[in-house]
Image 1 (tube, rainbow, N blue to C red):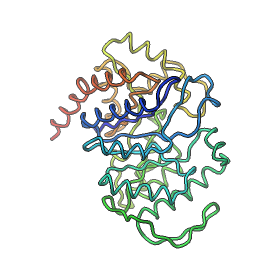
Image 2: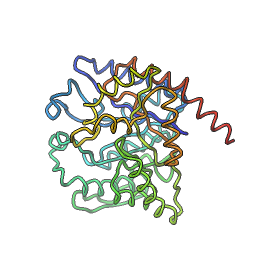
Image 3: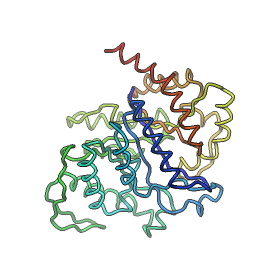
Image 4: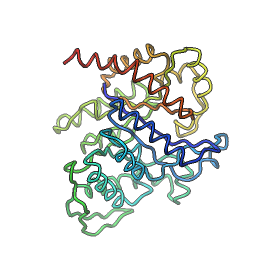
Length: 342
């Protein structure tokens, strides 16, 4: 099983943003040393306080994730950098494509470009973009992004963009025909689009097993006949994780963590009951986490899990302790399984 790490630079009140970036980089360096496949960084804009007055701090302080990504590349050996997600509704897609091409060149092909259309109302308000335009803007931007990153001469005329004949530089260097694209979506229509265009798909951490299975089946029915890969590695499952040797500490975490689920949902609906919420986590002792990961593998044929260790505004030391425990007591189990298959 392939493991990646999602990281949101949540910055509680009183936290120095520079320190938060340093701590996050230390966690990423540990993930690289652990042999994690990728690191996925969020994109956030403006203050969250106006919309979420109950949250004492900022949900995220990464308005330009690939700027941070270059620091990650310079500080690690092999881990890939993914965006979860790069919002292509709020940025000119030509500029996003150029940013990705430069990153592909300088990182020697270590980019997985996850893209989406956003959902936080204060971000749309800040950019003066009506939320009802998000879908149309996203589809136009995605086509421009895809064509632009291929290094070919192209033009585009749509409702929101009118681009004359251009050819972007630098050309795709390490990843051809273009850097890899992932759609962050649970929408069946966009799943079909991803399959038609040979994109990977990033699931939401709140997606149920049945929903993900249905989406993957839809994807395979389209991508397979077109000759595109249907590898589950390109269809990672995202899950919050909390691991501790003491079951009482796990329960305390789950009870304390419940309010933060609203921020993960994005639409700020009422939280589900605690026991239902726990079913969406990888949560428990090392033995329990192994069992839950095995269930993902066996019931969904999951081969790639993106783990969110710092969900719920944990301290840096709590995250590092979790990752170390995961490395020592969970990862060896799956390494032994891989060796047995080989």
